[in-house]
Length: 163
Image (cartoon, rainbow, N blue to C red; front, side, top):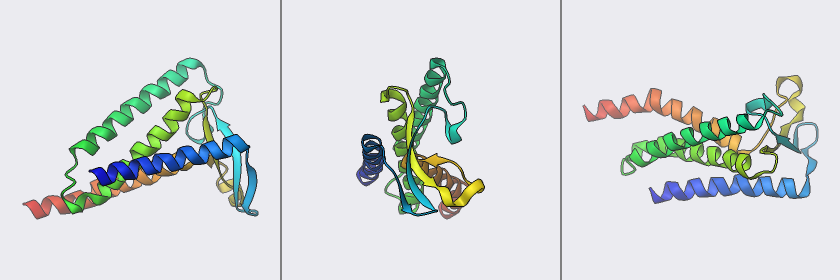
C-alpha cells in the first residue's frame, strides 16, 4: 500500500507543480510548433469547459461531487488487496483517480476564481480537439480507462483463479 500512496503523492505533486509554474509565469509557448503548446488558461467551468462562469452554488456542487468521488476512490483503495500482485492495474487506476480528483479539487478550492489551471494544448489537431487540459485531467482519464479494463477483463480472471 505504501508504494501506491507514494505514487499518488508524486502524481499529485506533478500536477500541482506544473500548474504553479505555468500560472506563475503565465506561460504560452510552443513545444512542438503547430502541434503541442503550453497555453495558460483558467477553466471556471467543468470538463471540456462546459458551464463557464457559473454561480457560486455551482462550485459547491462541484466540490461536493469531488468529495463523493474522492471518498469512493479512497474506500476502493483501502479495500484493495495489495498483497495480490494481480491487482497492480487496479491500484494504479485508483492512484491516478485519487491524484486527478485531488489535483483539480485543490484548484477549485484554493484559486481565487475557483478555476482549474489548464495548459496542455494540442493545437495541431485542429477542429478534432480544441480543449486545453492539465495533468489531473490526464490522470482521471487514464485512471478511468484502467479501472474499466480491470473491472471488465482482469477481475473475471482473478475470480476464476480463486474458484
